[in-house]
Amino acid sequence: MIFEKEKVKSKDCPYCTGKGYFQLLLGGSETCKHCHGSGKK
Image (cartoon, rainbow, N blue to C red; front, side, top):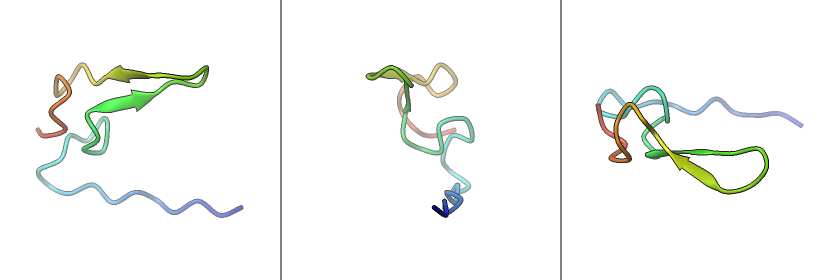
């Protein structure tokens, strides 16, 4: 399986790639602490 690298826009948060959250391994999600869930820098 080949994974494509996600492109990060210059206005997006570099930690969560603009999503505003992290997907957890055991299920669920957690709000990005760096952008407080906004997905922007």
